[in-house]
Amino acid sequence: MTYVDDGNFDHDLTYLATIAEPKAIRDYYAADVVMYLVVSGGIGISGLSHQPGYQGLSAPGGSGETGYAPFASAALQFNCALLAPEPGPGPPCVDYYVFPHEFAHNFGANHNIENSPWPNYPTTYTPPGPLESYAFGRYGNATGMNGGYRTLMSYFEGPALCDTPCSRVGYYSNPAVTTPDGFKTGNSAANNAAVIQMYASATAQYRISERIFSDGFEVAQ
Amino acid sequence: MKWRSDVRKKAIYVLAAATFQLGGGVAHAQFPILTDIGVTLTATPTSNLVPGQFVDFTLTVTNYGPQATSLLVLDSSHFTNEIAQFVTNPSECYLVATIADAVEPYAYISWYVAGLPGQTDFLVGETLTCHFQFALSAQAPASWPFTFSVSTFDPDINSANDVGTVTLRRAVAAVSATPVPVLSPATWFLLVVLLAASACRASYVARSSK
Image 1 (cartoon, chains in turn purple, cyan):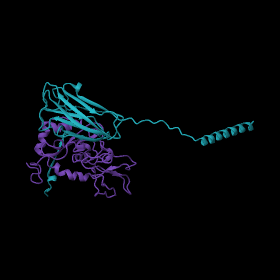
Image 2 (cartoon, each protein chain N blue to C red):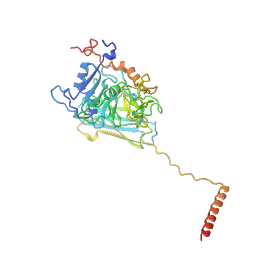
Image 3 (cartoon, rainbow over the protein chains, first blue to last red):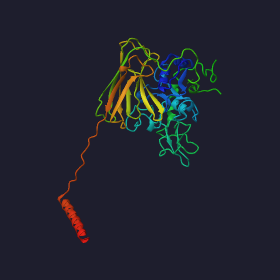
Image 4 (cartoon, helix red, strand yellow):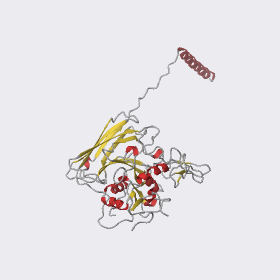
């Protein structure tokens, strides 16, 4: 690409949605979701993502350039993408597992409810709110553990609620998944796995694959 | 093993800016637009607001020239938990929410006026209007400015009219005076007796100590 980012994630997302070059690359590879990895997007920030359907804004679904399709993208600091922050030229990572975190925002997954932009939903006000009322992350302690856990979308809410270090585990909130040492990752009010599954099919229609995996697995030449 | 799920077959395109530099001219992270864009934001009501009460916003953008533009994005100011509920009309204006994963996570709203595939150029003299509503949450401060402005990604030639601002003010809770207890005559009599007894005791102790 000929674009040189300036360390501003906001600019990166606008670039991906509006400028001809990245749109052409996206179309060529029929990418449903674009994940843009950079050295830095700013101090004190590790990722930025659009979010479908929030409060009635650009709902998921559609194909080509309708609905949420043109916005299905996120930008993140590359050395914070996976399990442990890797040394890099950018600023310190705010968190880790940022790639699956930003990716899931594009399916309607949210942070733990205390760290969502509309924290009162759904207890105080009626819909529209997040895509689904249960689409939140979860954190907590588990019996017999040394320290609490939090799911991929959850923030650390302090040692009183999640014992230090409150490690981010490689799970989206899901009532059916409990870690081996007893942290139940989800419940009826925290089930990001369900919202991801619910909108996966709609997301898969943002672009129709013709090259990547055209034979079912291999990249077409 | 072949992937059978359509979902799994779908490509997730990862652009790594650190490694993808394919030559050619270098584009910068700003794409200035060579025309004067004016933004206004009005709202009603803006004062004596209570949590959950909807405010009607009118966001207007005008191209004052001299050129049409094929790119224009407006961004709102950042918010964390000040907004309780947001209502838009997607058929009128194309808004999208963005979530920032920062030390203190925040969100903002963008209006893509021009630049998405299928959108037409924003012509000289053209004015577009976007109506939306939101309600303040219980966490909103007493006075909260909310803005929409031309994105710093696509700055125009005249920044003086790029920002529309509305300041929302919450209702101030009425301050009640501290209630004065009403005492019955019997209570007053008892109070006087107790005070007199206390005074006599103090006087006796003083005399005895001489």
